[in-house]
Length: 313
Figure 1 (tube, rainbow, N blue to C red):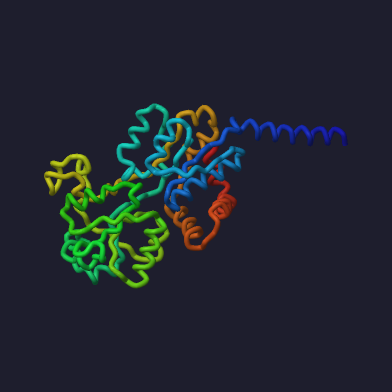
Figure 2 (cartoon, rainbow, N blue to C red; figure 1 turned 180 degrees about the vertical axis):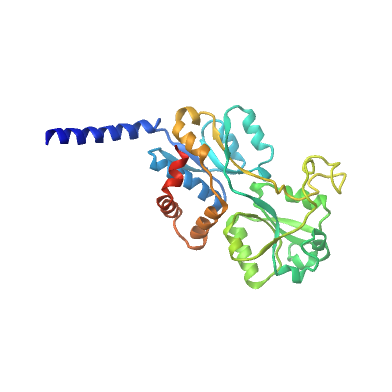
């Protein structure tokens, strides 16, 4: 009996030692939370998985562009959903400091574009051709923009290239930035419920696409150079006389010290991927179902243990 007890105690101690050894530092791994629900899903999946491995994780609210500077001094340890289509030169500037590194492609298949509810094709004949928008700009006008149409844009802190795009294409529209993702969704819900005119900047993956058919405006197609070379495209005096880049990808980035201080966490964050269907389903649970995000994520981790454990192997 004593031998059995000693053996049991030894196994328990060995297990505790192994668990402690797996967590290389008790310092907090600070993961950036940006301004939209999908990014929160991405971040909490990784963060809650790290917690299950014993890591100390903190979630830090961070602006999309300012976070790049914060990565350089470990004010933020990692940010996990950077869209190549709208991060601009900030990505390369961060890399050039030597204080951050790429952590690989997240795996989401993104699309950012000018979109409209499908019913607008009856109110604005000629859609999805972008030139049709000018012909019926007054259909989209509001009291503040009349006679120009209103274009519901991203929040200003997400970038303002649509202002350049509207000017470069001589569009009879005013860009009206939304205050947040929540404001965009509130406008989408209100307008689509009454089938009111709306054209806006929107993206996928997003759960809203499962509730309403959204169509993409056919702007002049993106080609290399149209965002930074005025001589390219239909307006020889302006950049952005084209669509958004539909070959965009979504990447992860981390502080350079992540690899040495938390090699196990570095392994997980580098290997970690997420697909559109998973993110959209979790977004729907949180934004539509009203479920607590940590509860929803941990339920997913419980049901997909083999998936998240493989990220750390």
